[in-house]
Image (cartoon, rainbow, N blue to C red; front, side):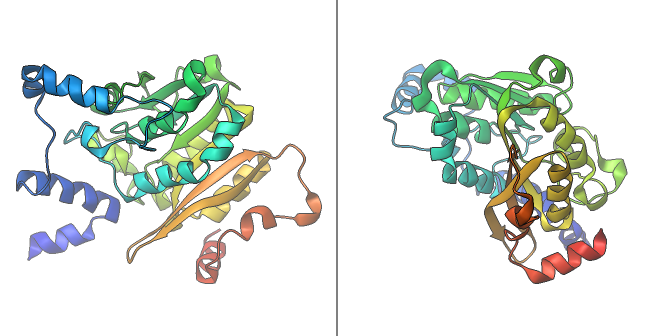
Length: 300
């Protein structure tokens, strides 16, 4: 009973990670073939690779879960990952019209999101380059394996957010996607090793998010777009106001609610010619929940 109460005390994102790990231990989740077996069955591996090779005529629009590399210290694709990919799918037509030359995922985890984005933009050919960063070495290796399983490539860098890349890529990135550590936790949990780094967001879940925003601002090109997952507890209305002060407009692409949390995938872009007569309606009207706004304003 004590263990059950302790498990319920974990935030939803952490519980999903723990539940996924437990299901693997008890054999309820199908596991990818161990590395040694993949090497022992090259014919099968090549056949799968051929069937699932990314091309403009490929029917799949996102990465295949069965080709995602799982690791006990890497956050697996879950509700928030799927929401982010669904947001990119919803905006796919505009992404293709934008013809991005450089895309980056900050906090790539298993590689599911960056692989899905590359598949969505595959019709643009070799003109798109991809970067993926993560502070977790295991996540970098998982992302590389997931990309390779889909016949894709990205420059993968083990770093904190985009440290070491900001100056070289400043103003050059056309698309930034990020599913940040947004779970409210103690500040001491931030920067922990392994999988904890994927969810520990500090006070109000904003400590890492607030560090990512200025980095994204520096990286994004004039036509650049930022897609970010936020939790209601992160006060997304305030995040939008902060980005508006930097010259960005914003809107919600996808919203998902469960009994435990409400997720928003927000798109930000440089508001080159803002219409001052409309005030903040461009982003304010996107949040339909009055109770959420009342709670947000009280926390400002």
